Every structure is written in C-alpha cells, then in structure tokens.
Amino acid sequence: MSQLRGDYKSVWNSLSGSKEDAYLVVSGYTDEDKFHADAEDTVDILRDTIGVHAEDTFLEIGCGVGRVGRVLSPFVRHWIGCDVSANMLRLAGRRLLGLTNISLQEISGYDLQPIPDASVDAVYTTVVFMHLEEWDRYNYVCEAMRVLKPGGRFYCDNVDLASPAGWEVFHNSLGYRAGDRPAYISKCSTHPEIEAFLKHAGFADVKVAGRLNFWVYGWGRKPQ
Image (cartoon, rainbow, N blue to C red; front, side):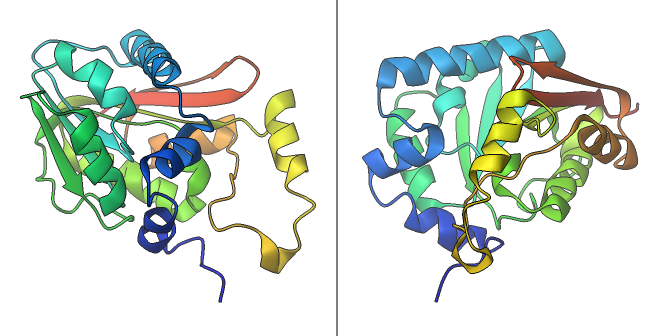
C-alpha cells in the first residue's frame, strides 16, 4: 500500500533512514560545503525580510538535519528546530553537537503543540511548504501566529508555480498516474496563496516577493 501524502511522520521517517538519504531528500545532494553555503543564503534572506537579532529566539518549522540552524544559531539567543521526523532530528543532533543555544523538538506534522503561546520572536519555514497539503501549510501559518510574541515575525517560502522554473517543476510531475505519485512530491504555491495565508492568519505588514524566477516567499509581523 502506498503512503498517503498527509501521513508526514511515516513518509519522512522512511525517507531519512540514513544520513545520505536524509541529505538527498532535503536538498538533492550530500556535499557538506554546499549545505553550508545554501544555509548562509537562507540566513541572508531572513536578515533581509524578518531580520535576525542577537536577542531573538528563532523557531524553524521543518528543520530537517539542521542545515539552517547550524548557521543561524550563532547569531541569535536561542534556536528551536522542529521536525516531524525523529530520524531527521537524530541526524540534526549530531550535526549541531557542541552548540549550546539550540533545542530540537519532534512535532506531529500538523501543528506546533509542544511550543507555548507567545514564546518566540521569529518563526520561519523554508523548503517545506512544497511537501505539505495546502490546508496544512495554512495551519502552520496559524500556529506561527500562536507561538509568536506580539510583534514577532514570520517567514515562509515555496516554489512559485507562476515562474518559468516553477512551472517546469509542476509540468515534470504530470507524467505520474494519480495513484503513482510519490507522497513527498513537490507542490508549488503562488503569490496570492502565500499572501492570503498570512493575511487570513492575522499577520500585519504582509509582503510577498519572488526570487531567481523560482521561489515565492512571504513574511509578516504579529500585531502588538
């Protein structure tokens, strides 16, 4: 029996049984230097959108093996990596060994229930929405609103369906028959979707932008 897309815990544990498998499914490569360089690029985007401050507690939804956390954590007070997969978190713990201002938290795949209300300064999720159903994307946006302090900031991204490269991602998946599509297959977003999610969740100062003719990303602030 094939896995259901929405059974995130089962899907992502099965995809991350080894370090190599986890790296490949997260990024498509296993080179640690490229992992670090791509994480630096993500941190630069966070600086340009929601800001990165030394006093911040940052939370990542879908932290995987700690690719971004390893680079971001030295610049913030505390970094919390949340993931649905116990295997991913085990590998993240190894990669982040020696960092004293981090926490790792297994979550259900649908919410951030272990995280208290109004407890963090910034929430972000990167290269994750593509693996989620739209309803679950929106629920994480709502959960980000819940766990953020007043004035806290949120960032999310996905492949942009309306971009040339994003359309290619979509078009390349047309060859699968309905019952044969992998549970982890990428599903794109659009600028209006990201904007609608953030605004309906109650975020203020919502902005949506594109990058490299491939990504759409949005960010906003929890009202005071």
